[in-house]
Amino acid sequence: MAMIPMNHHTVHTLAIVFGILGNVISLMVYLAPVPTFIRIFKNKSTESFQSLPYLVALFSSMLWLYYALIKTNAIFLVSINSFGCVVEVIYCIMYILYAPKDARKLTIKLFVLMNVVSFVMIYLIIQFAINENHRVSFLGWVCTFISIAVFAAPLSIVVRVVKTRSVQFMPFNLSLFLTLSGVVWFAYGFFKNDICIYLPNVVGFVLGIIQMLLYGYYSKYGGVKDEKIEAGVVNIVVVNPLGTCEVFPISLDENEDIIEDVINQQIQVQKLGVEEKQEKSDDQAIGLQYVV
Image (spheres, rainbow, N blue to C red):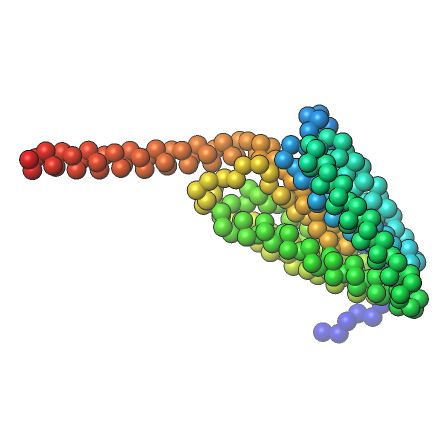
């Protein structure tokens, strides 16, 4: 089937449309952790939440913003990643303010190492070691490789779903955001003819489809297969605008009703098992009495 030819004006218009849609969806993705930080602010404690996802998201936003600035004519990348940098900085500051001493020290060390030292090194290499004609492509591929590398994070959720036969740890709306984000930013990169944008989002789209298919298949299972449920925090992963991943830690007690039902079921099963063993022991004891 032949492709429908499109003139330059049509391609430019479609790039604008998908750029706007991408900003809207990505704005919602960046604001997804707000309930978590409202909870942190109210409790004056970070509890079991981790700072690494927000540091990684900030690092990603900084790199993509730098890429957009040296690329020029990339207003949609500048706008959403500028917003992302501001939001993630606020998240990190709030985390540092309310984190316990050890977690605070670790967060500051990671921030300095990743968001200061690593970013400055990349900046210096590009500005002084790379030819001006190759700076955009070099930085673009750096961003692309980093984006694809962190796709290992959502795979842990996929493995958990298959292992437990429960979609409790993979909410459908987050998987939907993953897919929509991948589709929209892929289209934007495609119409802008920028492989560094659309390539990582191919992975995001495929991963999103896999998660939704798993949700459809395993949603028919009511319980979990594991003998015990891990206490603490569940990491929910969503892919951000340009292919990187954000992990949204959600405390298990936010799913208290589900967890309580599962635990009650497991307790009942354990009681039945104990009762069956007791009955067998009693039968054996009676049998021995008859033998004697």
